[in-house]
Image 1 (tube, helix red, strand yellow):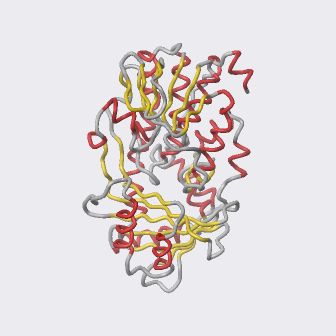
Image 2 (image 1 turned 90 degrees about the vertical axis):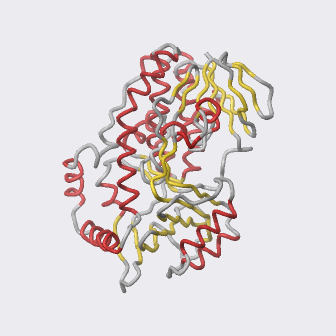
Length: 409
C-alpha cells in the first residue's frame, strides 16, 4: 500500500518512519527545496513524545541537541529588579519527562531516522487530489496513491483542497507569536532573558550549539490583525507597532528585524474540525488539530498523532474506513485537552492587565522557592489538565511491525 504524506517538518517524518516499519510504501512531498537548516524556534517534547522518540532510537540525538535553557530572567516595567525562575521548576508542574529542542533540529533527526526507506520529494506541492487516489503536483507528474495524509501545518494545503478554506475551522484565541534569528550579542548560554509587560512579552535565548540567538515575541490584541500569513514586511511592521516604547533590549531587537536571516510570524489559532478524515485522505498534527502554537504542546501532540495514525493504519490492514475513525477516537481526548490547556496558557503567559502582570510576577517568585518534589506532587494532584501530557498512554503497535520494517531498524 502506497501512502503520500504532504509535509516534512515533524509529523510527516515521524509518520513516514512508523508506516515503513509496518510495511507501507511511503512518499513524502515537501514544498521547501530542502530541509530547513536555520534552527527554527524552540519546541517542547513531553513524556509521550519523548517515549516515541526512544522507540525510534533517536532520543540520545535529541538530548544532545537540547537547548539547555535552565534559567528565565524577566524584566518588568516599574520593577527595579528582574524576576528569575528555574525552567526545571516550571516544567515539573506539567511533565516529568521533557526535552526542549530547536524545531528544525528535531525535524532533521526524525527525517534521518527513516530517510533511507522513504521517498522524499522536495520543492513540490500537491495541487489536486482525486477520489480515486490520483494526485496532481505543481511540478512533477500526476501519481496514484492509496492514501494521502496532510502533515503540512496550520495552513495546510491538503486540508484546503479536501475540506475547504481555513477560516471554516480556525479559531483565533487572542494572541500572536513571532520568532526572529538575531546575533547572540548578550552571550546567552543556558538562560532566557526578556521583558514581561501588559499584553506583550519578549524573550531572548540561544542553545549550546547555535551561533546566534532567537528573539520570541508574544502579544495580545483585542481584535484579529489584518495581514496575510506570507506577507513578511507587514508582519514586521505589526511587531514594531506593538512593541514600540518597551525598554531593555527591545529597540535593538526590533532593529534586527531588518536583517534577520530567519523570521516566523503567526496567530495563535486553534483548528476545530468535526473530523480530520474524508475518504482516503486524513490530517495529522497542526494540519488537523493545532491547539495553538507555543501554548498547547502542539509539537508533542503532532508526534503522538503521527505514531497513533500509523499504528491504527497497521492494525486495520491499511483500510481507511476502519483506521481513520480509530485514529480519531484514540487521539480525541488528547486533542481536546490540548485545546483547553492552550486557552488557559494564552491568558496566563501574556498578562492582559496590570493585575495579571502582578499575579504572574508573584507566581514566579513563589514557584522558584518551592522544592521540585513538591511541585511534581502538586502537578499530579492537579488532575488531567495540569499533567495532560503525562496522562497519555501510548498503545503498543509492535505486533504489526513487518519483517521488512524490522529489518530496516
